Length: 429
Image (cartoon, rainbow, N blue to C red; front, side):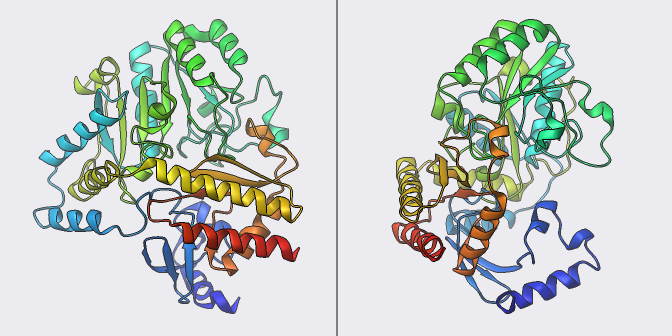
C-alpha cells in the first residue's frame, strides 16, 4: 500500500466531509480510491506520483484522450466572453446542427447535463406522444440512477425470476415500489420474446429503451438482425424506440451505434464522448416526437442546459471527431482484443474478450460467448479484480468491471505495453 499512501490518506480525510469519501458510488469500489493530479493523452498521474496508461478514459468520455489541446483552447477562448447567460447563444445552434449532420435520428435536439436526464426526457416524450404508460427495458442495461430507470440493471439471479419473464428488481434503497409498476423487463437479444410481448401488450407500451450495445454488462453486441427486428416491431405497434447512446454515441462511429448498425431509432440519448469529459448530454430524435417539447407541452428545463463551457467543449470535440479516422481506432482496438486472447490462451487462461475496437470487455469465464445479462453472472469477478489490481501495479489502469476503452490518443506502443503487462501476470500464475 505504500505505492498508494497519499491516496489512502486523502481517502481517509475525505470520509469526514464526503458521504463515503467519494462523489459517486462506483468510485468507492476501489480500495483505496485513487486520487489523481493530472492527465494528458493516455497518461494519468496520481497523488503519489505514480503514472498510469489509461484504458478507463473516465468511464468512457475521453475519446480524444485526456486534455486535448484543440478542445481546451476553444473552451478557454469561448469562456472569456461569458459563462452562463440564462438565455440562448449561437454556439448551441451550431452544436445542434452538428447532430443533424451526423446522427441519423436527429431531426431536432435538446441539450441537458447528464445522460440520465436525457433518458428521463426520452421516456417523458414517449409517454406524451403515445398516451401510454409502460416502458419496456432489458435486464442489465443501465439508463441512469433515477427511480424509474434503476430497475433490473444488476439484479441477482435469485431476484431476477424466470428467464423468459424477468421480475422487475429495484436497484437502490429509497426507491418506491411503484417505480417499477409501469416497467416491463425482458432479456436482451431475444427477438421472439420481444415480438410476443409487443403483440400482447403493445397497446400499453410507450417505449422500448435499450443500449444498442449492452456496454454496461460485458459489452454484449446485438445478435444479427435483433436491432432491425426491434425497429420493425416498434413501428408495427406504434411504440417509440429509444437508443441509449450515452456510451456508444460518437464512440462506435461519428453517427453512433445507429449509424454503425444502420438502424435508426425514434429517439436517442447521448453523453460521455460527445464533449470529451465535459458534463453535457443530448436528447435527439424525430421532429414529430420532439415537437411537443418545442410547443412547451412537455416540460424540459434546466438552468445549466447548454451553458457556454459544455457547449463549446461538445462543439470542439465533434469538430475534432469529424477528422478522426474511426477505422484506425477500431483497428487498434481489435489488435488489443486479439492480442489479449492470444496471450491468455498461451498461458492457459479461460478469458473471453468481446465487443468492438473502441470499447470491449474482458471476462474470466468458461463461456465461449456472453449473449445476455444472465450469462454475465457466470463471470469470475474475484479473478477479474485480481487481474485489474495486478495491472494497476504495473501501471495499467482498467475498470473493475472489465470494460476497456480506447481513445484516439492510444498508440501501437500503448497496446504492446498493455499486452506485455497482461502476459506477465498470466505467465506468473
